[in-house]
Length: 205
Ligand SMILES: C[S@@+](CC[C@H](N)C(=O)[O-])C[C@H]1O[C@@H](n2cnc3c(N)ncnc32)[C@H](O)[C@@H]1O
Image 1 (spheres, helix red, strand yellow):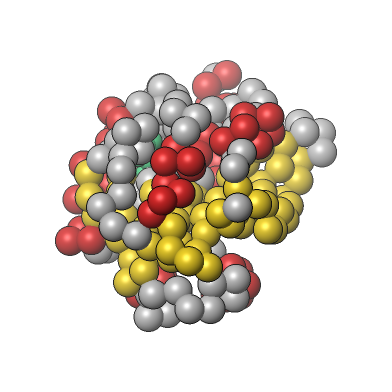
Image 2 (cartoon, rainbow, N blue to C red):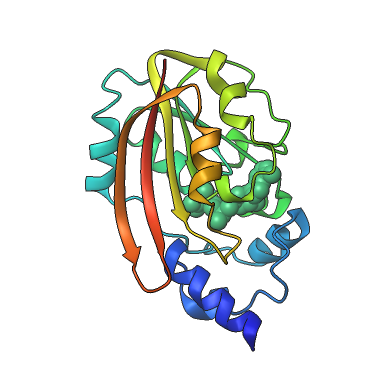
């Protein structure tokens, strides 16, 4: 029962429909967990997607962007959205099931972000609902040499404590060390539980 309650709360922050969240049996958040999350879902797992307006607002920070990498890309929906904006988008995820269900499987590489090294430079790295699950604190710094001039990193994440989908504010700021935080915007706030959904745009110093 406590587990179901947990999934419901996580669902609010990730924008997942309750009944889908409730199907998860054990929130271990490892690769096997994510494979179970995606398994047998041809119509997709409904994590909150960027609206047309939200994505336009983000891309306004990168007017010349041509190539992007979506880290923890899941079923590739953001890659498809980016393609419709003439941005060549690639993705990485460690879940083979996510790739099987992907709308752009040919653009999806299977790899663990804890050790992932990008194969080329891009204008934008996206980390949407994934940074809280990454153990390696150096991920963002490792990406730095692969960010093109005027490029950056876009992060959408729940911040708070008590849920695995949330990153602690202190840890997030540590991971962002070495970058300029050009934008930090709260998109949703749960005052009672002291959790929030935040968009960050980072630039190289
Ligand atoms: C909450 S889902 C978000 C998916 C997608 N970004 C979206 O917003 O629709 C988190 C995704 O990150 C992936 N993921 C979690 N930890 C990962 C890791 N260490 N390496 C690669 N992918 C990971 C999961 O497989 C899952 O697809």
